[in-house]
Image 1 (spheres, rainbow, N blue to C red):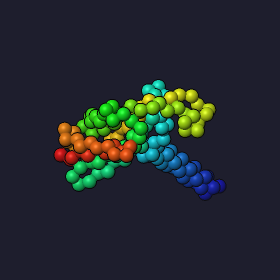
Image 2 (image 1 turned 60 degrees about the horizontal axis):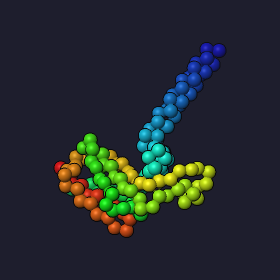
Image 3 (image 1 turned 30 degrees about the vertical axis):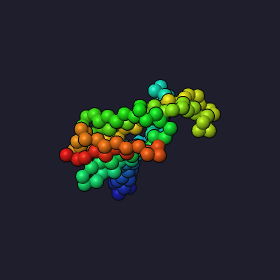
Image 4 (image 1 turned 135 degrees about the vertical axis):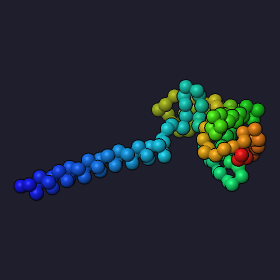
Length: 141
């Protein structure tokens, strides 16, 4: 009878640890791979696809900014390592333009925010735009 209780307590302890482990792993997964909509209806903004590439000498950020007015493109570095890119679109887009008919709303700008865990020199940004792709090169300090 005592062995049976010990076995039961051991199984309960294992189950408790497994439950805690699953909760922690889900939390880590949510932090590593956050899921969010690709738009912000309140700001009429679509979130642009972006990529951060870190080399030994610089950080290179590319952002997919098709159909934007080039004179409205802004690249801001805040908090030392947070890069925000925004631009107004030449033509407003609606959900139905993407084949989504059960939602309403239109978008007039694109933006993306990337954080880099490097010490960068934000005074020496090199920005280029070609075929709808914005490239930002920031040297490391």
